[in-house]
Amino acid sequence: MEYNKVRECVFELPKENAMNVPARIYATEKILNSIENIAIEQLCNTATLPGIQKYALALPDCHTGYGFPIGGVAAFDPKENGVVSPGGIGFDINCGVRLIRTELTAQDIKPKLRELIDVLFNLVPAGVGEKGKIRLAKDELGELFKEGAGYAVEKGYGWKKDLQRIEEGGCMKEANPEKVSEKAFQRGMPQSGTLGSGNHFIEVQEVKEIFDGKIAEKFGLFKGQAVVMLHSGSRGAGHQIATDYLDVMQRAMQKYKISVPDKQLACAPIESQEGRDYLEAMWCGVNYAFANRQAMTHWIREGFAQILGQDAEKLGMEIVYDICHNVAKFEKHGGKELLVHRKGATRAMPAGRKENPADYKSTGHPAIIPGSMGTASYILVGTEQGLKESFASVCHGAGRTMSR
Image (cartoon, rainbow, N blue to C red; front, side):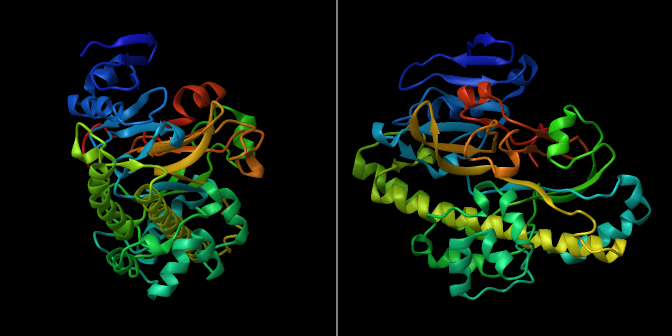
């Protein structure tokens, strides 16, 4: 493929054939040459969707996904017949990461690290299809779908102030459980508070390097500090919601006479009944994942308290931030209200944006980029340039170059 080099680390495939916008890739030349051709083809296919704005974007960790590439971003204008596509969010709705700080250094916990890991492993259910310690009745799950992390806090899993450090306050308020299938309810009822499998993890980490001392201080981070990173999503409930609505979207495309180059890009107009139904169901999946990570945070705090002999408050175990990787949300960009799809991508709003919690108005919220299998993780902040160029989006991982 013939790329145009826009500048260092920015490459573009011009608009051609059915593409409505160019495809843009953020990568070094070495990374660009390693991206699978299928992922680039998926990116170009994304650029054909109705109402897409500016570019179909690929971030440095781009690789082949379902419909959209993973590590892909696309924004759609409802007023220009823009669409919503489940393939642009993925099956693990609100797969995301949470960072929990401590007042401890890595050296403080090193003598008890093996014991700590064993306790965490016992406290937090993990594995394929694993069922949790929280068993919800259908009406309780309906409340969780509506309230997200707030539901978990109300039931004693965590602290009220936790909600201030979660994207969207831990709740997509327009979530509607009436748009969720019986099968998704059945899959979600036994799995709340479970880690899952694949590349989901709980990791005890050490802050090894500080690049901006003032921002690190604002985030409560210091060199040598022990922190905990949690990576998990919406489990079977989210997967079922995505599966259900892919069928709905296939029928909707016939109804609205939408043609796409790949059936995995099945979509519907944002303002259609089918589009709205999917959004309200998908946001239930988002809320499920927020509540899921909230319950696990409670058990992580319990584990630390048990092994280190102090309660979690005294250990300073506050949430630094919790952020989504797979989601579509309405945001204002360039004066337009757009539906931004992020699939394997992290929001990174700069200072001053209303989406930032009060604690981070002056810095922008933390954008958490987990490493993979021994590689380092990073905490970033967004910039005005990133806001303009990538709809305030950055990559969602820093390490994996092959399938898990």
